[in-house]
Each structure stands twice: as structure tokens, then as C-alpha cells.
Amino acid sequence: MPFIPHTDAELKEMLAAIGAGEIEELFDEIPAELRSTGLDEIPLGKSEMEIGRLMHQRAGEDQRQLCFAGAGAYEHHIPAAVWELTTRGEFYSAYTPYQAEASQGTLQLLYEFQSMMTGLTGMDVSNASLYDGASSLAEAVLMAVRANRKSKSKRILTPKTVHPHYRAVAHTITHHQGIILEELDYDQKAGRIDIDSLPKDPGDFTALVIPQPNFFGSLEEVDALTDWAHEHKALVIAVVNPTSLALIKPPGEWGEIGADIVCGDGQPLGAPLSSGGPYFGIMCCRKDYVRQMPGRIIGRTTDLNGDEGFTLTLQAREQHIRRSKATSNICTNQGLLVTAATIYMSLVGPQGLFNIASASHNNTKMLVDKLSKVAGVKKVFNSPFFHETVFEFELPVHEIIRALSAQSIVAGVSLGEYYPELNNCLLMCATETKSEADIDLLVDNISRIAARLESTKYPVQPKMA
Image (tube, rainbow, N blue to C red; front, side, top):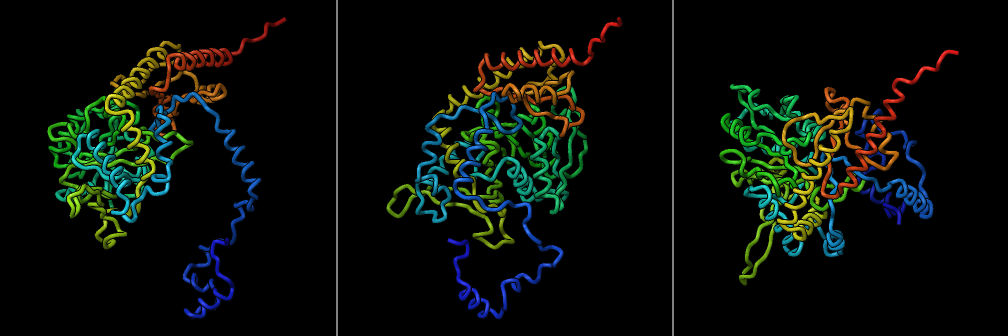
């Protein structure tokens, strides 16, 4: 069926009814210089057989590799039952409750997800998810500006230790609203914010963003930072990895009164790497700020017969109220990924999540111990870490990455693009999916590659006859 299944006669009848001679007249307000003259870069349509062959070819290129990259997307073991259940018809095609009260199963699942997230983060309230970690930080910044009415500056202190992609997305979404993301530098030795370097009189600022763990994998001094921000009448936005919260202090317990808003990416909770997504954003807050929270909040209640039921309690988005009163233009949530995350957390349970976090930390400690013994490799930062950290190489990291890729090993994430001072450094991660044999294989390959590159660095000169 054509995309627009109207006949030419029907089109003429509709145009005549509105007094237009042709469809192009409906778009005459668009300047000629802004109009596309064609889609020359778009290839012609293919047949079903050709599409099938192309997709098989693409799938063949996506080979299974030993992955030591992290940087916001982490490889964890996902029990087979998670996606077997998630892709059942009851969830797979009905994960967004447009007719809310008729979707009791979906609403209950979202309610359970919210309950789990408040348990993990130590916060009062959770919404039913956002798009991803980067946009959840942007929404948290907008929310902080709305919630902290005592501050007029719209200054958000954002450390360089926050994921560079998160900072870029937050800037794109917020800067046209006069919001300033003011960067804080980090301690070059510790790879985290130096609390003593913070100004005694920072002036009016709306919120401080605290990543825990930060982009380098280091653990920030969250208690001191939280109290410093609150002393200056600013809110605290925590950016977290949900898996780490099974092992380290939740943001609801930071400092004297805890963080105010929590955001991050839920990808570690049952979402595979999948060549780049999709993922989902998490957001929690203190009860004081619940009416400024974007997205959906599911509540539990009782009906007229006294039976338990679930409903959309708060949904302050522009589809439901006046646009000028909406807190966000979030039009749906990543419900399918939330379904997977809820099933994942239900299956592994609190102890299982603790075991995953502990095993990930221990594997990264093993990686540090073994890789630090390789000549020309050293760990960069001296602060505690969760499950990833930064290594510096004497030899060019792009050569290390290329050579390891040929052995089907993803070495890590090169940091030079984002941090020029870390030009020859790799951010490397080892989750619970890595065995000691995997780590030994990585270290052995790096040792061999380093030796080969070193031997070609200064070629032996031929002897004179």
C-alpha cells in the first residue's frame, strides 16, 4: 500500500475544498533556498531479496569481540529470560500505556521499576524513565533551574569529569534558554574534583553536577561536594551508574541531606550493547521537587471496590496540559528497555546485583595489577575506582587499538579527542563478564604488540661492507 493511499481525484477534491491548486501551495511559506532539490545521496529502493542479503552482510561484520571498553556503555551478562519475557506480545507491543487505566500490567511493571530505582538511589521518587543518560542530565539541569527558585543565575557547575557526550547534549538542549554549564577542572593526579580547589565564594549558582563514578571511573568525594553545594544554596545533581549503587553509597545518603536530583543511563540493567543502543534514562528526586520532574510517574491506588490498581499519577507533559505549563516535551519513555531492566533486577535480585558490582570491581583491580606490570604502561589516576580506569601508554594508543582490533579485542576508549592532556591514554573497563583468562589474553597481546612496535621504532642499520 502506498504511504498516502489517496487517488489523484481525492487529492484534487481535498485541495479544492481548501482553495489550493496543488500540494506545493501548502508549503509556499518555505523560502526557495531552504528547499531540497533532490535526495541524490539516498540510494534507490531495493527488493526484499536484496535487503535480506544486505542485512546478512551487515550482520556478518558485527563479529563477537572481547570488549574492554566502557565509557557509559557496559557489557554485562543478561539472563536469557530477560529478553524472552520482554519480547512477549504483552510487553513488546504494549509498553507505552496510552490508554492508561486499561494497561494495568504495564502500569504495575513501571511502578515496580520506580520502586526499584528509589531503592537503589535512596531517593523519594522515580519517574518511569527518559530517553537516555545524556538527555536525562539535560532534563535534570532544566529541572534544577525550575526547582531552585532562590537562584537567578542559571549557572550549573559541571565538572570535566562528567561524560563528554552528556555535557555536549546538555549544552545543546539548555544553552538557548540562557543556562550556563560552567566547567570545573579536575585534579590531574586523582582524576576527580579537588574539593580544596573549589572557591570559598562561588557566587550565585543553581546546581552542582556530581558524577559517581565519574567518566574516568574514579570515585568523587561526594559527601564533601554535596555539603559544599548545599552550603551555597545550590542543588546537587547526581549522575550515576545504577550497577555501582549496589556497592557504593547511594546519592540519597550523600552528605548531610543527600542529593536533590539523580540521573543517569539504565543501560547496565539488562540492555545489551547492540552496536549502540537503544538505552534509557533514569531520573529520581526528593519529594520536594516531584512536580518539577519530567516524564511519567505511576502511582498505586484502590478502586471503588477496594481492589488495588495502578494509574498515571503525574504526567506534566505538553500532550496533556498547556504547553506553557509543561515541564518537558518528553512524549514517551523508553518503556521496552524499562521492561527489560525491571525483569533483569527482579531476576538477579539485590544480592545478585551486589555480586555483579563486586565482581566487576575485582576484575578491574586484576586488570590494573596485571597491565601495570607491562613495560610502557601505567595507571594514570591514584584515586579509588569502580570498574574502569585510565591507562597511559608510551607507544601511540591508536596503534595499540588497531593491533588489538585485528585480534578481535576492543582495547578501550581513547581519551585524546575529549581530553588533550590525556592524548595517549585509554579508558579501560572489566565487568563481571571477563575472566582471568580474558585479562591475561589482553595483557599478553599488549605486551607482544608493544614489543613489536618498539622494535620497529629504531630499525637496526645494515652493516657497511
